[in-house]
Image 1: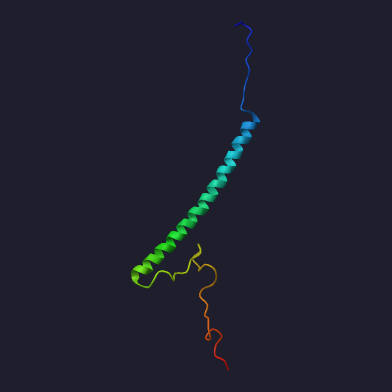
Image 2: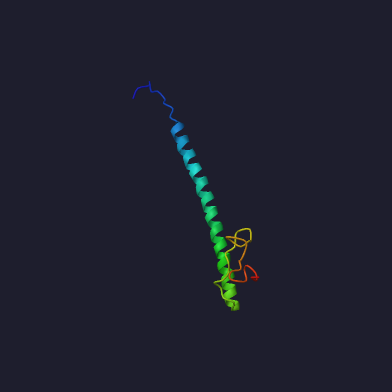
Length: 91
């Protein structure tokens, strides 16, 4: 080798920055999705525990309505009456 060597500076560049940002955005979306799924799992676990508690008490466990995260019955505003008594007496 001779004494006339040149130093070349190498940096990661814009490509590495873009790749890092794509990974960071993907990580954020994956964490949001995981949190959403964990909340669903915890809700289902609470419903299962409520059914198991009712089954232990002997009241049956299959008739427990699902519950929304805010504590209200899921899918509507509660049980609805059906049959001839739902409309009242016929005059």
